[in-house]
Amino acid sequence: MLILLAWFIHGVRPWFPRGWYLMKFDTASGMFLSALSLGLLSAKYSTARWWGGGVAAMLVLLLAVVALYEHFSGRPTGLDTLIVADTTSDKPGLMSAQTATYLLMMAASLLLATVPRRSFGIAVFVLSILLSLQALIVFSGYCFNAVQLFGQSMSTRTSPHTLACMLLLAVALTGWRAQHGYFSALIGKGLGSRLARRVFPFVLLLPFAAMLISSAMAGAGWLSPPVAVGLTIAVLAAALCGLVSLMGRRINTMERGLRELSLTDDVTGVLNYRGFALLGEQSFLEAQRNHVIVTLLIFNIENIKEIGEDFGNDVGVRIMRDIAGILRASFAPADIVARTEGDEFAVIANDESTGGVIALMRVGEAMEDMNAANRAYRIRFSVGEATSDPASGETFRGLIERAGLVRRERRRVERVFGNDDDPIGIQVPSQVARQLQDTHI
Image (cartoon, rainbow, N blue to C red; front, side, top):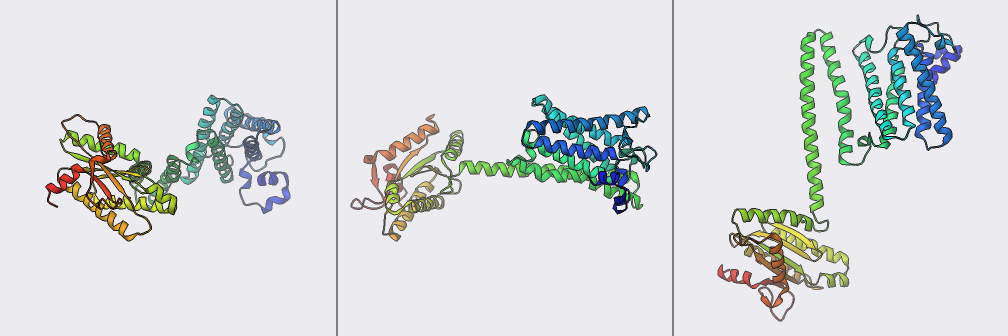
């Protein structure tokens, strides 16, 4: 709009920076109409906006086609200077072929975007990429002083302010189309979108930075042009390899975080039922293959509901966390500890020695200490146990059912911690009690 103002009003031209006239009147009109069309089409739909955006895009198309015709035929049409005269150039009013090509693709993108068809949407996606590429090519021409990339002569070239409009329009068009699916990876909320936004600036700027440094070193005489090119390629290859490695590491970290989040109980921090089913079965199958015995212990907090009703939900949550901490501290780090239900925990322990029995004793002592320290309420544990037999062909599901059956059959349970007069304590299976006696502990 500022350049259009200068073309119409001679009195304001002295206030403009030198070289403003390199953006021809037709170029400024095409950029303005492109922005107008994009603004109308991307706004909330109405018939007036739809028609207005389409008409503006058609005018842009006309300007681009006329300019390209004059470039290829060498014959002026007179349309370039129909509205305002141009005395600053040997080819009055004629924009560069690069600018005309850009406006042609922009007009095609805007017109195709008005048609709600998937194939047209793909075409707009491709044109958006080509528009960005065209703007980057012109930018490269300025960076490396390659006149052929941004114009045909010094009076017919893509000016820096035209290049700024190109870049801004390409970004605007990409941002608009991102709402329709094809560029959604750049604006989404997912892990891939966040990673793409972080990597995108490096991928875009790294080649330009490397080539600019290389050109500067060659121009200063520090390196010969072949050496500068070779070093630039090597640096870019190493940088891209490092970037791919960092992306892979980041994706692995995100994946691991998601996996831990989906397999971990939010309240206690131990595995949830999904994690127990996944890792527990894997541990069980490995033990079967290696002919190793594992023991599954199911702990049930029998009166947690009553405690929650009497003392509040916060107390119940704190108890669950404390018990999860006791189980993790009592068993080996390699053992699997999970909260499988609201009031139930499960532990899969290696049973090659008496380590599991000793861990169970630690649980009992910690539970007694917890009950002794608190006089408002007491916690009661019952335990069911099942030991695997590698030669039996039993499944992991069968092991779980057998442990649950043992826990439910209270008549087969005898007390180890506490006494019969005090119903509050930890109940363990008689098989574990016999193991305790056999180890003389």
